[in-house]
Image (cartoon, rainbow, N blue to C red):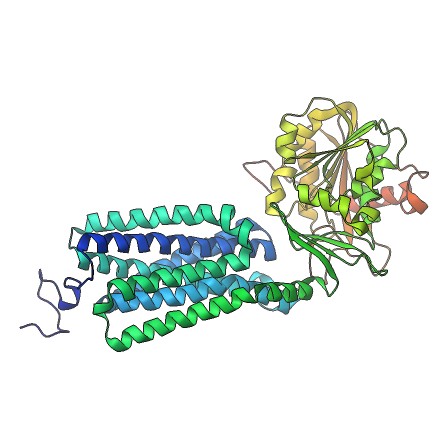
Length: 545
């Protein structure tokens, strides 16, 4: 007789791996296990995508965040699979406990990351030095738990009906991969737009807990002692209680966290299909700040300095037809319309919600001079790159590229040689292209890569920069919210299709003489002293920012 916990002789099945006592037929039981694998796999992938999306939003550089999350998680899955071998004797109880813990950790992960970001402030603490400790901790923990599922599920499915290992693995992985597909598609097309990141993660955790608990307590309850059943039931009820409580208070939490990040005077906060838009101030004498995905895009304190420096040098020369790429806030269009002789302004903006807000919000529309009420301004909702591919040739005298910082991964294609080649194609022979190229003092390599890329596209460049005059200089656009140490300059490159354009402004157009040609030329001399040589152009297949 073999003792209950003694090693089984070779070729025999240990007692704990014997046939499961199911309340249903084996075929039905097998189907239910594979359905549970499908749902758990979908939940697991949603957790991964939630971490990647939130980390990209909070920290930036989506490629780095995706690499960190996925590599750490896959590594942890391997460790979790090895560790779970010790739980095979208690496969049902172990799987139930793992799913309850995974539901709690995965469901609360997005809220915990957002809370840490909001209340650490100044991008210090856990975010300093690129350590991303909390992100790695959640990736590691979730990966360990997901990896531990596989050996236990293999054990459970084999106990229902013993079959060759290859066939069992094929069935298990088929359900797992199809579930991952559904989770991967549900996240961007269902959970994120309808529920948002925080609520979406909490709902996913609740589904995970219900399915994992129901599978074990309903199908394998005879494998558990009475005490184990009660403990597992109470654990799942507690997890669901925590997730439900968090879901009820998620709006209050998000409001408090948003105020911690943006300040106490958040006036508008909305999610479009493209990004999160936040407006602060704009009333009772407080300057208006516009944040897109947590990054300052325009501040009423000094945005005129940025937009004047971006637009007015490019307007020297023919400027009857002007194209603005980005600039949905209407502030670049405001500066363009100051020039006499402008007959048409086309604004190509990806986010229709931002344009609508720029038209309807009293403070923002006042700041942009009600530019969208001018009959000469025409808005196209489209991706700038795709729109340029079908744009008419030599149709514009001036192109203004008012796009996010080149250091943001999602924007790198808009600073590529291919993109500038398309922009050059829509310029008239005497046309000019003005590009926002990020701060020079703190990121000279990225700035000069923009210049190199423009020249590689056949354009003739005049790089320059402007700095702030006051201590209130906020150094937008693209300064992360809450960050106190910010660059104190804006870098630009003015490019001509046929000749190198000069740096001049029409003093009669620039309001209150806040920007002069001499200042631009001095900015060009300062910038030249930071030149980084030997750089290569950035392309779609080899981005260099």
